[in-house]
Amino acid sequence: MVTSSSVPRLVVAAPSSRSGKTTVATGLMAAFAARGVAVSPHKVGPDYIDPGYHALATGRVGRNLDAYLCGPELVGPLFLHGARGCDIAVVEGVMGMYDGAAGEGELASTAHVAKLLRAPVVLVVDASSQSRSVAALVHGFVSFDPEVRVGGVILNKVASDRHEELLREALEQVGVPVLGVLRRAPQVDTPSRHLGLVPVAERRAAAVEAVAAMAAQVSAGCDLDALAGLARSAGALSCAAWDAAEAVSSPPHHLTRSDKRPGRHAGGGAPRVAVAGGPAFTFSYAEHAELLAAAGADVVPFDPLRDEELPEATSGLVIGGGFPEVYAAELSANEGLRKAVAVLAESGAPVAAECAGLLYLCRELDGLPMCGVLDAGARMTERLTLGYRDAVAVGDSVLAAAGTRMRGHEFHRTAVEPGSGADPAWGFRTPHRRVEGFVQRGVHASYLHTHWAAEPGVARRFVERCRTS
Image 1 (spheres, rainbow, N blue to C red):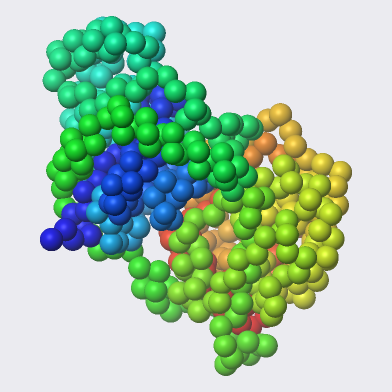
Image 2 (tube, helix red, strand yellow):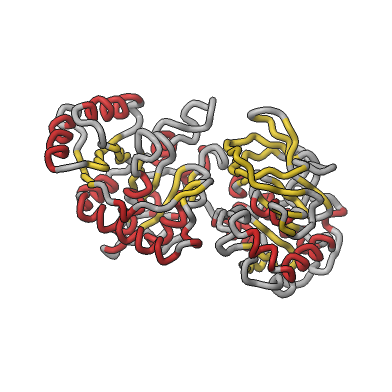
């Protein structure tokens, strides 16, 4: 019997970005799923977009494993949480295999996560424009860290049968088996724009076709039986699966007597927390909704592009990341919802907004009216802001008490002016000291993406404020 701690698993890595990790990982997930196998999909790092394709391939929620945001100690438990009831897990890596948080050594790299999961690695190599040199490349990645077990290679973008023959001859010297060979296939390509791939929610039919093409290519070019056998060689994990209810069960650390005063939900039913979704707000971690529900909230999704009102009896609002700049005209045209959000915020109800949510709460975005909760303007820029951040809560808010430390990630090509309010949300310790974001009444708005599993008290505190606001 396969227990959750010994679920077969593979990590799909590459020497660099754009080598074909997403194609191979997503194709593997879909190919295994087509065999009737229950596949658990995972992504190393903070990426929100690839897990959408993983979910499409497997029919299960795509989950992230980020050793920087959550800490190395939570990688195994979060993995086991996602892998419950599954026959195999496929973990897509990030960047090059040994690339992690800047200046932090191996932390949060694909190699680091593979070691934490005791999982074998399949190295995807872009073989275009090389032949014998592939042996030196693979040898270097195999030998760089002896604790990382590279169990096989999948060669991508192979030009011809003769090219494949030369590559295989070269790799015989390295002793790493070739588990797959993929030819160039434009039909598996997915369109990109300023922040990476276009999310599944924006191109549903085309995304379904692309995932089907990935599955067909991987099924035809890879040895699925050998890959499944390699996955079964993963070592058992000694940790227990993460559980949202257990995570929020400890008493609140930061509530004061005034925080606990009776309010409109005191002693009543579960406070209703509306969570923005739809094509404009696709960036969220599944654990956030799970933690909110475990903390006692009635979590209700809504789509700011379509819904003209907030869900009935909304007590709190969570607006995550996404692409409001792409849908600015439609969001602006939904005047009824914009006004409802402004009224809710003015009432003092808890509102948590990250990145896209921050832009939506601004006075305007690229000249188009938004909710007007914050006296700030937002606009698209040419500059990409990207990287992990070590943050501390500047003051008390609906999410955190002053002094609470959290790690987060910034990823945007927009700018908000001013960049912070009279009461900022966060002070950043890295890469340079600055304050950012807005805290006013019940609103906490910031560019910073955080993973609440690292600090479950965030969800607990937010729901408690929903009860008492």
